[in-house]
Image 1 (cartoon, rainbow, N blue to C red):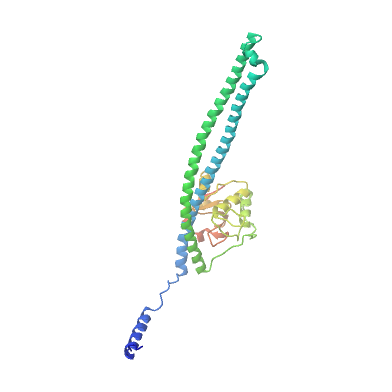
Image 2 (image 1 turned 135 degrees about the vertical axis):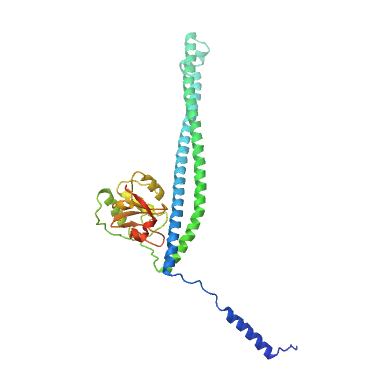
Amino acid sequence: MWHRRVPLAVGLSAAMVVAFQAGLAGPAMAEPRPTIAEAKAKLKKLEDKADLAVERYNEANERWKKTRKKYQELNADLKERQERVDRMRADIRSLVATAYSEGDIGIAGITGAGDPQRALSGIATLTQLSAARAEALKGFEQAVKELEQRRDEAKKAMKEAEEDREDFRRKKIEVEKLVREQERLLRRLGTYKTGDPNSAGMRYTGPASGNARVALQFAFAQIGKPYRYGGTGPGAWDCSGLTQAAWRAAGVELPRTTTQQWAWGASRRVPLDALQPGDLVFSRSLGHVGLYIGGGKMVHAPRTGDVVKITTLSAYGMHRLLGGVRP
């Protein structure tokens, strides 16, 4: 079979045009690597956003736990009371059956066989017993009805809390995206730290005394362990999980989240220039909290990709701090 031949010059020209165009296009331009200053600036913004979003999720999760616990307790109480009502009903039925079949108020007594006065007395006794039991039963049935109403209200509150929790779960997904971006930035900076869940930490030798010293000794023993949002130990911590556990070791029970800890300390707040070792130090967004150790420093669980460590307040950013609370 014969094929039409293309002139050599035409073929070469076409090839040269394609090559020239390819040369103009060149490889795709890579995204420029940010400078350290730019990466750190972006990282600071991500930290604030992540702190706040995680804190809101923690709060929603705590609310859900509390409403679920209340619902479960009321449901268990309702079940117990309903069983008692059922037993009381059975007792009344048994009383009536027994009264008519045996004893002083049997059939013979009620039908008038024997002493008529005794028959009337038997009927009166039966009536009194039944009335007393019925009155008690009525009271319990009313209590059960009221408990059912409280249980239903608790169920509604739990459902609303579940919806809030789901909303914050979706926002948590957004936080996880921020966290992944944060991790990439940290790796670019060469500062990403995985931490050691079994870290022995450091020994506290500062001036604090009493409960504050115990709290700081606990916090120092966690130094080197990784940050994990939602972390409550023993191998990883988030910021408020660390402060809560530290002060729990000292015999003081703080609420779980940063916002709750700030609210708990409403009557115990101190300005930044009056901080003492052991005081809680809060960020303006209420998305972060640490333990002041003195000398313008705090021990805290900073963020994903970092570990429990000591940081100066100035390095964290004095403009980012709100104030302190003295447990």
